[in-house]
Length: 395
Ligand code: A3P
Ligand code: MG
Ligand code: MG
Image 1 (cartoon, rainbow, N blue to C red):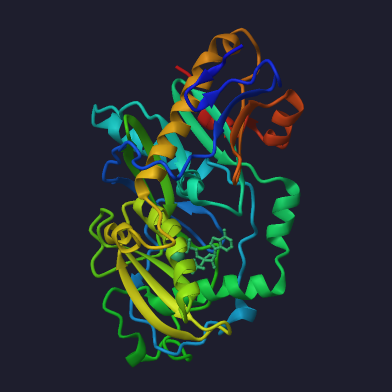
Image 2: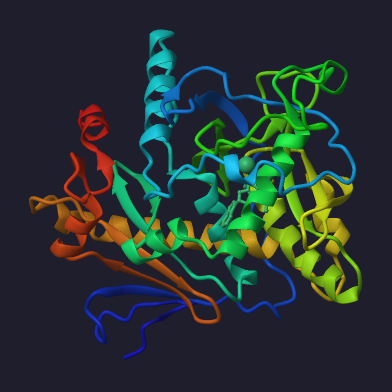
């Protein structure tokens, strides 16, 4: 039987649990159809304390300062306080949304219908998939009253792997955090060097990855409204209460030849979408030696990045990513809508699994009871949503 619906093919007859398969996008297609992405607008911010407790303050906000050239990015490695990697639960983002909703309602307003709630990292993975040829990803998805909730699915094995990094990878990961320290200060007009608050030249304080400052924004991809939360590294100058002073900090190996340049241009796709999704207008890249010595620092305007790579060997087209993302969201909306009728007649709430395999594509299936139990992980949850939130959204 012909079950071809454009690119989306139903495979229900072959494998009953697989609901849909979205083929790997054909990058040779000349022109992707354009999907609009609305300028993100900030709803709220919050901080995580050193105990990794969420609070609705800007206590973890940092200000950009120029890092010293030649900075040693290994400095302070032994004192790094590492936040353990955990499942990508949405709880903190849901707390923020719940608070925003309450505030809006107190002023007799109403938050518009939201199509998707997700951490920024998950949306970045979805959007950059067309150009990803190494790392796959998996998501858990739930649909409640027309809102899709995304949670990254990390197996216990993958979590263990992340928590027991190879020494080399651990060192390289630290370089990124050390760069953040050198580039930031807790006051806007830092006289850090003059006061020598820190004994080490230009150092902004020891790295504690429990401490994070996060922004929650609303935006639109095509006709789907999204609420996205993500960490913001620092602000330049004065914090305006919006996203326009945000700065993303990145490190990368110094470019020494054509090969390095192509690799860097490929990486820019991820840098671009990571920042773009939260409305971060500036990315400051610290180039380093393999041994972690900062060589040069370059600032990029986020919106100009696509133009920089256009027509180059490692080129990527942001429209391909936006179109792919739009197709993924449409597919998930369709699947969850189609199956919601069946869902009404049963006890449990369905949880969906999306699996992306580079070079192959993306498949969606519904989890079986045992797999849902794995997602719940004996916590007080409905699927992966915390029960307090679940209760709150029941009319
Ligand atoms: P770099 O990006 O400079 O390498 P972010 O850039 O998102 O603010 O993250 C800060 C740092 O966290 C990164 O610095 C990197 O060291 C580490 N990091 C972020 N995402 C990571 C991932 N998926 N795997 C390993 N390290 C990661
Ligand atoms: Mg960050
Ligand atoms: Mg960063």
